[in-house]
Amino acid sequence: MNASITLVAVTGPQKATPARVPVRPLGPDDLPELASLWRQVYASGAGLQRGGDSGWIGTSMAEGGGRTAAADAASLVTSGPDGQITAAIIVTELDGEAVIDELFTHPDHRRQGLAEELLLHCMGVLHTSGRTTVKVTVDANNSAAMALYLSRDFRRVADDMTDADYD
Image (cartoon, rainbow, N blue to C red; front, side, top):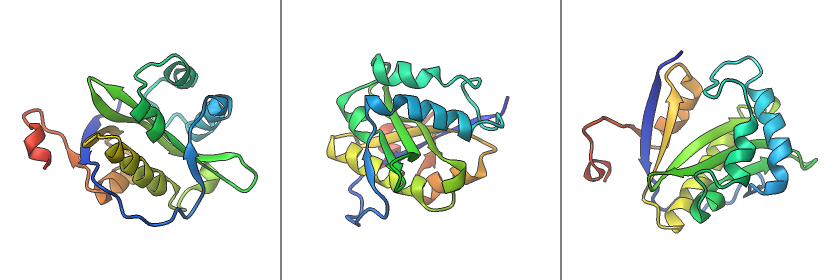
């Protein structure tokens, strides 16, 4: 099992730039397509934190596992011209904190800035809803994810850090 690193960022107001791709809230009707996309993304088993079972998506989204209005509004997808989901960010809440549970892009749509677009929109939604920080746990070997989060001012969480350290 690979080591994981927890990162945190201050949400803050995001630049009001127009979306380069259509971004919309993730809805219950998206769950079957989202689960299928998740399985495609992690088909090699690389980066899997849930043992290859996409059933958590339906549980998390449909049964309220860690769901709040802020988390629901910050869970977003992008879609291509055909309407199929190309990337998704899923946010939940744990102990009163916003947590990015997943951020993934269809293999055919990587390196197009979709993950960054979703992350920026998500952070803006969380800020608007009153969330001051957001956390994410990343596989230490996932250099692309680490680079994305660090480029958006996420910082490693140390056990002895307090909320004042994030300001």
